[in-house]
Image 1 (tube, rainbow, N blue to C red):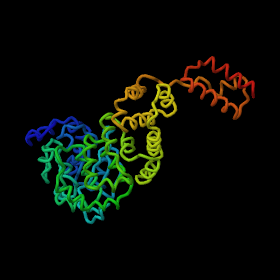
Image 2: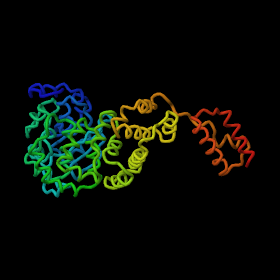
Image 3: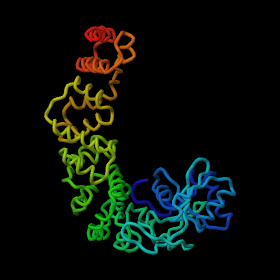
Image 4: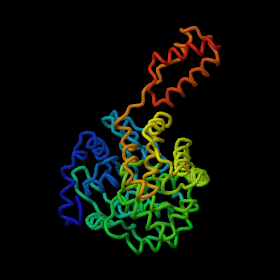
Length: 416
């Protein structure tokens, strides 16, 4: 579905959804209802179904309390895990599919990061504590839609709006400022809601209260969303990127990367938007608490930028791919492409970029066992010999044959 759709057409889309009619979904909803409780699908599954998007996870809201959910699952031979029982969430497994089943809640207190909740049977109260109208719609097992906060018009118009008062929603959890941009980058059309933007700007200092892990998770999702280029520019224009990135954002590089490498990973996009020097990579990795593997990609991109201007040969490109592996090689090519339009137009870089599809790195034909069989004494000298021969093999574009390398290995063994 694209563009603005009449609401009555959207309403028809839920009744015949395969995921909703699935026996596994119906079973979980059925045991809750048969136990005397109300149960409805909520959030992302309803939103994505109305938008014609794939359904990833199915969340269920219910008037049943966690202990009742656990007991109903047990008596109906379904596995249940108390994943977040303090907040009312139990994961029920049906047909191998996990369903997060959560008791209806209302907020008792919030501090900008976390909420203390109380269980309720009030569907409106549960909807009113959610972040955006498009995430606060419910549907029952028959596909009937319940829209207590008027999310359907926003689905039809592809708009993202806070439930109730934007400032109140943001101050309950400052991460909602980033979530606003993430959902708009993923689902929105036109321009972001101006009122929401004004409140986000007023509350931007609250982002400093959030953990690095929560910011990283949300920002990486923004970077791979369909409208990532536009939304990061909006965030920059309103002074919000400063609260996420401890570096000067390279928005032109980021736009070129997204245009030329549409399937690039979130970490690579983070490297391109945030890294110019090795110091940038260290600061960014520390700010967002990146894993060692993620930090390595950032460091690699910084190295690539320091080598700009060197014209690559295909021989050198094959060496890169062999030594670096697919992830770092992709980072190198993407970073070079994003550095300037001149690089994008360079036919050599086009050929280099296609190398992964046209060339399979060979396996080094020698091994330590082979050296011992040829008479070498076990020990560190074997590793030294093999390293020398491997470097010779790589430097000669992987052309020396196994037989040639064995002759050279025998010669090295004699020397030792």
